[in-house]
Amino acid sequence: MKSAAHTRAVEPAGPTGPAGQASSAGSAGQAQAAPSAPARQPATTGPTQFTLVKAHTKAHILEQLRIPVAVISNTIFPSLAFLFFVIPQEAVASNPTAALTALSQLAMFGVMSAFLFSYGVGVAEDRANPWTTYMRTLPVGPVPGTVARAAAAMMFAFFALVPLFLLGGFLTSALEAFTVDGLSWWRIPASLAVFLLCGLPFLALGLTIGYLCTSKVAVAVTQVVFFPMAFAGGMMLPPMIFPAWLNTFSLMLPSRAARDLSVEVLTGTGLHGSTIVAIIAWTAVLGTLAVWANRRDQGRRFR
Amino acid sequence: MTTTIAAPLAAARNVSKTFGTQKALDGVSLDIQPGEAVGLLGPNGAGKSTLIGLLTGLRRSDGGTVELFGHNPLTPAARRALGVTPQATAVPHTLKVREAVELVAAHFTNAVPVAELLDQFGLTDMASKQCGGLSGGQQRRLLVAIALVGRPSLVILDEPTTGLDVEAREILWEQLRQYRANGGTMLITSHYLAEIEALASRVVVIDQGHVVADGTVDEIRGHISVRRISLRTPTALDTLAALPGVVDAANDGGTTRLVSRDADELVRRIVGDGIDFSDLQVHAASLEEAFMAITGTGSAPSSPKSKDS
Image 1 (tube, rainbow over the protein chains, first blue to last red):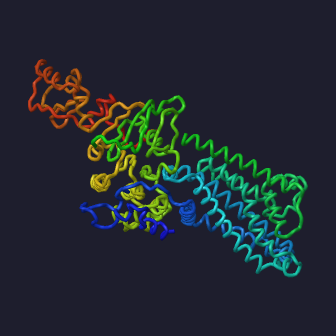
Image 2: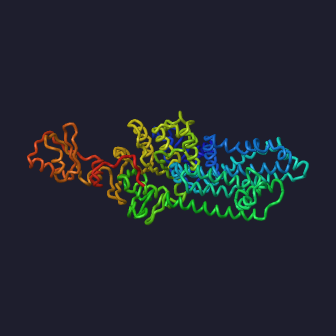
Image 3: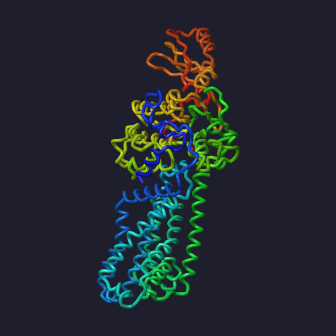
């Protein structure tokens, strides 16, 4: 990326070559022509959308990496939970289906956490930062920044999945579901896609929180929403051991729907009838809320 | 600054903008021609930041038209030759200096090579520092450098040197003078009238959402014929301040300074009233004094602390 920005700048922008003209030393009589002299002719084209997405994604990733606590906790929490709560249970670890179920539950937990926090807290912080306002004066529409944030959040979610899958593969009998019980291998890559897709309602929920709350409030609200939702959605304890009333309530939650879908795609153990309806309905509702919250925020700050 | 047929780089025509019940801008018209350096002055809440928000594509006007290079500033393509300084504290805290400049540079097809720009602004040594760790002066330099990275035809600088010491300010001024000397156009707001006097060829004063004055620095001073009269006198300051046409009165180490709309009349009154004085001098007013007379605020543009909306 660094080199991309660099080479771009050195290339003459067109036949008139304003860039080359201004940066070649001692070209005109002007002894002290600064490198930042204005272009003779304003550019008629901008950089490609791809260049912009790349630049914004890099910035998002760097910004998150500079706060390593958040990244590390996000990345290793699902793996730690797996190590401490799943591996010691002989009955789960030695049963391929049970191990796979536990694995996909915690994977979904990791994705949900990455999306909720990166959007809820990230958007709230961005709104408070005048740098974000400045970025709106650049010749760029809203798309590259939006795509970049999603790309960065997905990347960090993916980082949480890798150690989890490795632990599951080496320390439990999960792989036997494929090698011995004949489960198809396509389920592993498919599950990655499903995890990210099922993260969409949480992405939208994060956006809604981020647009409605200040950054301090957003941290609290996200935590308050996140843990009960993860628990009641069966991401920490399997919903099979829930009492009936909790199970009924659980089935209405987006976290449960996401959990059930990811368990199904990895283990093929079947789906409750309401799951698909629940995930689509929640995605639609939370998506609409996010759009509303965004419009409200834009209307307040940039009317 | 001779009149040309060239289209203005930025234009506001009869623009109004209301926030709730408050009129931030009310029928403002302003053209910025290529090569001009326009100083935008006004007390807090006068509508300066609102006008800049409209010109930079941050806000939508309620009435009238706003154009940037002949297009609507709300469309990203219209902003390709625009450079803007981020607000005072607006640095991406966790990005390193080089990364922040690279991020902005990626938005322009003929950006200044990042290393050259950092060198020009004396930021090379801190290229690997996080922006949040820079001193106030270094941050200001970074913000102005960022405004110029895309080789803009027009830069809009909103209080670029607020809070800087004299030396640091002079360094930034030099960069901006060079930018102008190379054909750049700029719009600058400042709380330091000296800055406007040093950098701008034209001054636009807005107050309560209206353009109240628009002209060269000399015209603004001359147009309202404000003069500064200094003299030594035992007479009480209050008595002098109450004389007709006096807009401001101050005592400075034995010398009394009066600012008056009509210096000739004031001198006649001082003599006629038999006020005892010596060392009487009449000067052209500074831009600051002219500003006070135009807006009738009776004070210099208020402290840089509070920002208008």
